[in-house]
Every structure is written in structure tokens, then in C-alpha cells.
Length: 78
Length: 420
Image (tube, rainbow over all chains, first blue to last red; front, side, top):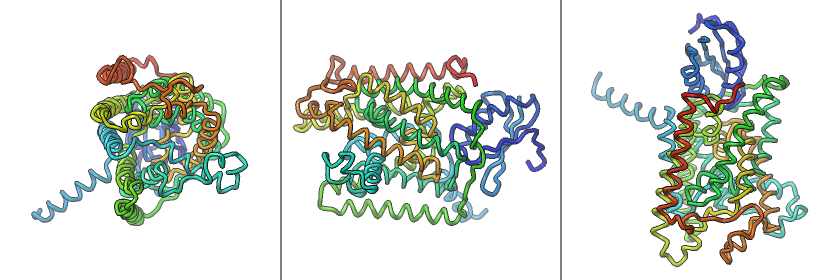
């Protein structure tokens, strides 16, 4: 997970449901297929919401990383 | 591995299942229905508005506006925190969610960006007006309303669907047009061990509370023991599964995901079946009038629909409905800490206006069983119509079945999903 290089980073810290997912949806529209979006978030709900959404919408959820005070999520656009 | 080590890993496995893992939406839906039936069997149906309205009344009382605004025409002061049933339900619910969030490691002070804080205030006001018109929030106005076989639940349900769509449309618009105050949120984490200790303290406090009430000779206080225990269990389940009813109404239009919507439909069906059995069994009791009237509100009409629209619109901006707000309060989400007082104060003011002007026609209903004296809609206990108990259940099953099929169909076709 440490060597994933993100093409775009989204700061969704402090946002609560449903904003992290909606901002992710918007951010992913700006990158091209195969590129990687990194989402920094603090809502515990994102741990389930983001992988589930990726599966339904054809993106690849690469994984999540626990940082001090927030999570990093990595998504590869499908 | 030695036998002791195997046993140790099994015990920590059980702890993980009970306190760490996210429970599935269906597990939560079933448990919440069973706990809600139990709550009715023990004392009365439960709701979230009773709590936030009581807390809102205390804020109004605290800032010295109680007499000025005319609350003193109804009572000298708000019901006491620890003896007012609604307030006890709310405290227990938040306590249960806090316990779950602490043990699961989810508790943290989550401070939102500025725009979200401002939205929280307006969201609370919308939710308060909506809950006043609809005769309750997503619980008292929809979930426990349909569960208690009252038609006003269907009026609010229609409103919730419309309001969720309008709320989402606004959010999409806002994302395109407002940049100010959308970043800069932060989280203040507590050390893991401290969270566990706080969780254990909450558990001890809840158990102690149950024992205190149970030891009382006053029947009203004695009843609060079970109410506290069941409401705390509800808060625990809601947080553990992150079960959010407004999400059930929102997700089909946002991402197409219908997992929560389906679990809400399942939960309503179980709840209605359980409550119908209890109410039917007790329909021969002397004080059955009091019993069937519980959670039947005079908002089957425009009040329920418009209230549902405003409530759902607000809840989408808040990021939580009545219950979703309260369990997120227990999780440390500051945005919902801001929503709650605005929601509560608006509910208190709304309820005052409705009561002073007899807008709902509650007095005529309770005293003379007149069902259409109010201006928000009418009181309609479905089993009192030609449907009877069986027909009422069939109607509820049918509506929930249709909703289930529609959201499931939409998940594959995305016909109702809004474009960003």
C-alpha cells in the first residue's frame, strides 16, 4: 500500500455521510481510466461505503490505510 | 496451539463479532424490529423526537424564554431529563451508540469543515419543522407509525421519498457551485485504551441506571428501567450496523445501492406483524383505547407528506435522520452535535404552536375519538377501517414488497438514480 502513487488526492476529512462518497464520485470523473484517486477521510462509514460503491460502479478498490487521525483510501478508476 | 490458546482466540473472536465487526443491514433491521416490539410490549412505542424536543425545551427554558414564548401555558417547566420518558429513551440511545463506538474503536471528535457546520443548523431546523408536521421523525412519523398500524406513516413515507430526491438535488447543486468551507475538517482521536475504558464506564452507567429505576416503587419510574435497557440496546445495534433509515431512502437515488432500503422494508414488516399480534391480543382489554391510540397521529394528509419532504431534505443535509443523528452524536460527530439542538428547539416551538392552536386535533381525538378535527390531516388507525388487522398487515406487506422490488430493480437498471 505504501508504494501506491496517486494521480489525484481528495481531502474529505471531517465530512460525514454522504459527502465523502459524493466528493469521491465527483473527483473520479476528473481522472482517466487506470489512474488512481486517493481519498483522505475520517468518516468510519467510508470503510464500507467506498469499497461497496467501487464494486457497483466498476472501479477497483485498492485498499485502505490507517493514518494518525484519518484513513487513506486508494481507488483505481475502471 | 494449546487448548488454552485456542480458547483465548475463540473468546476474542466472540468479542470481535459483538463489539468490533460491522453488523449487516439485515441483522440490524431484524434486531431493531424485535427490540421495538419488545419496547411496545414493555411500555410504549419509542421515538427520537420526544428526546430532542425535551432537550430543546430545556435550552429555551435555560435562556429564559420559556414564559415569553408561551410555553408556560402548557407547563411550568420541561419534563426532567431523567424522568421524562422521551428524554430517557434519547439518553439511553446515545449512550448505547457511544458504548458501541468506543468498544468498536469508532469514537472520535470529528470536526467538520465550516460549510458543513452552517448546513447543520439549517438541517436541524428543516428536520424540526418536518417532524412537527409529520407527527414524528423517521421513527415516530414513519417506522413506528406504520409499525403501529397508523396510516400517517404512509403519508410520511411518500414525503420521505420526494424529500430525499430534492435533498440530493440540492447537494449536487451545492457541490458544483460552492467551494467555500468544504475542506479543513479534522479529527481528534482518543487513545484506544481510553476508548475501551470510556466504553466500560458507559456500560456500567447504563446498567446502574437500569437498577436504579428498577428499584423504584413508583410505577412510572420502574417502567423506565426496561425503557432505558431497550433504548440502549437499540442505540448499540444502530451504531454497530451504521443503520440509517434516511440512507435507505437516499442511496437508491444516489448510487443505486438498495441494501439499506431492503433492510428497512424487512424491518417494518417484522415490526408491523409483531405489533399487530400484540395489539390484536389486547384489543379486549379495558384500557385498550389508550393502547391502540399510541403513535396514531393526526397527520395522515398534507402534514405527513409535506413534513416528510422537509424532514428528508433536512436529514440529507444533516447526514442523519432522527435516529441517524442521535447515534452519530454518540460517535463524536460534531456536525450532528450542532444539528441536535436546532432540531430540538424547532421541534419544541413547532409542538407548542400545534398544541396551543389544537392544529392536530389531538384533544378531540383522545377525548372523543374525533379523527378529523385537526388541520394537518386525520387520525387513521388502519385496523379500525374495513381492513381489520389482517387486511392492514396485508397492505403493509404489499407496500413494503413493492418498495423492495422497485429499489432492487433500480439497483440493476439505475432508472431512479440521479445524475450528478
